Length: 223
Length: 220
Image (cartoon, rainbow over all chains, first blue to last red; front, side):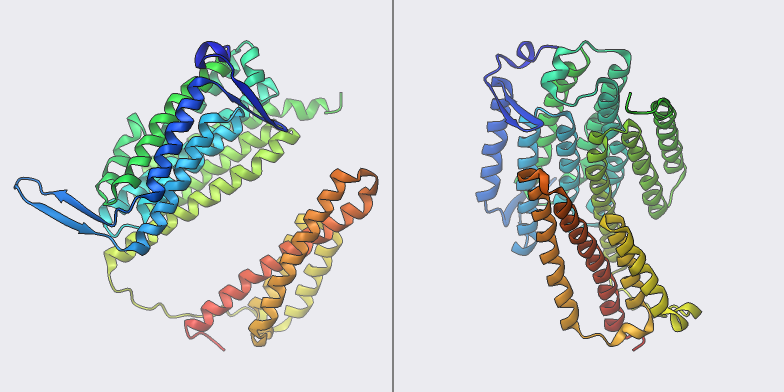
């Protein structure tokens, strides 16, 4: 499908050799939203939190030491940057790489906590993310194999064939597994019980935005 | 046509092989209740992914395999780290495991000879593969008894050489782009650079293992 009919008019291109970034109002809006949120995470200090206790009227003060938070903040910033990259990239394989990176850092953000249940959930999510790399990279490779290019600008000009539609379905399965949405959400839900609100929120935000962008990419590629 | 017909005909069988291998791997995971085994079988699914990427068989696909492999390695390392830390939280205080060195005949009799052959063969191959072979030679030498006396300073020096040869590799590639007519020296520079770089890095793995053995109070 044409890029302009999905994301608004083409504002410009940034050619980095093979990898051509392109800018549409749709991409730019999501890119800016992620960058603003990443900036908020980078400057936030959330070592101390107040949690509401369930069943009573009381509140509870939770403290996490700075050393643990420093790693998680760094990984959250990396996750934000990877999401921002996935928003503007014009190269299908870079998109899959950014999605895979989001999957890895999501595991990393929760892996520093000291709760067995959370680590268990992170392990299951990690297994799903690893399994999802087969349809993710396999789909991208099939698109390359059947069309000869990975540039979204060129793919948007081509008509889809059954092979590319199959590759798009594989790619969508990969993105769904890697970001842990609908059928795989159970593997991720326990992870949100860990303290550290903004860092957990970036996991949500990245999967939402990546799914929206993935649908745009798949429509461009397969229609 | 540049690519032989036979190579092109391999595309579909390779894709099917990858998908079937991945499917068998997924079945295995669904049957498996042991976490560690599930993790190891998951690696098979990842390798099936590499098969599908490799099936495309163009220069671009070749450039895609490396990131795919890196992603795969990073994921398996992260998940196994999580598994270890979860088990440690469950166990609490972990008893120290007694270290028992490998007792192999070849470790006592022929470390110099085998290491020399591996390094010589690696130099003969040059490039990334050669670096890996030569590195295996160094690794073998370090793992065996003879090399235990090497001081840490020497290994720091080898790490430094690794950095220098990395620059050599980069400079070689720069020459490729700036002055293509000097391709032979550029090829030589990058070939030697990557050889020594990979070899020294492989050797350092051995040093790390040796230091850990020493810390665990192993054989010295």
